[in-house]
Image (tube, rainbow, N blue to C red; front, top):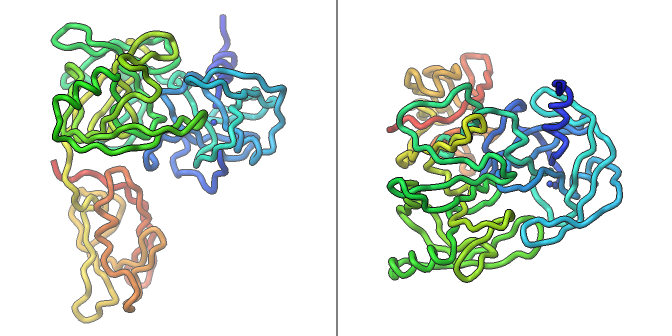
Length: 387
């Protein structure tokens, strides 16, 4: 029988891609959105690292820059295919690797690339040991679930044994094709050439520009890019999404690393109005389209100038909102937001804090206020307050 220690070693031994990290996010025990990335915190030999949760990665690995920063020793290099490229791969000497409250001693795979990034590596979808994982691009959160929800979700067949995340979409019960989810790709929806050409024919009025694309290995290349208010792959619908051809595809079809055709790639930006649940336990992917929410005050509080002293911004807060739940009260005086000073009243001082509060749901703010003679710091997570 396999021991729990062996299972942990198996779960992490495939690990980890690089650049230096100045600080860690305040959520050490679960994945989290930061900008256009999903990140996971960990440690190697006690030093903090950040890994991109990359459902498009065929294996997990550190990047070469992290090896330099952490002063790790490597064994002999060899070549391995990453996409259409052969890249140098190495392994570290055994290190103390920690994640999700567990620490093991194991060598770690390394992709030797000189290209710089704002993270230390990538971790594949199979290396996050959860039966069901929710990627909520609408509210910008990532959660593990104990059970799957009921109504209101579409179900798609998951290719459970594939190291990259693929599922099959249907159109009125008829199989349409395989779809590739790549949370490590900062793009929207990328289509097989025949689908892209068909969409361009059907939308001759659509504007087209160019974008660059790369996988942190190989060449940086340019591709066409358009915008669609709505696009459907059979029963799977996307709204307000950028469209383009699948990188490195042929003239008519796109071929995955496993040698089989696929029809579309879902990048991280295509998930902005979607919730997606990956269930390894039931071999399904669940999706839910979420209508876009207009920009609005997601704090549930405003700070108004004192009529007698405009240097003071007094709070007015609604019950049940993120501000109230964090502990901010009516008449608190604003001092700072994320170290931006609002306590001065000079021609160059910021006086309008409202742009901070209309940032996307899930954004975290540190708000400092004065209450009488006392100063208080509150950590607030913005939420969508309008339907």
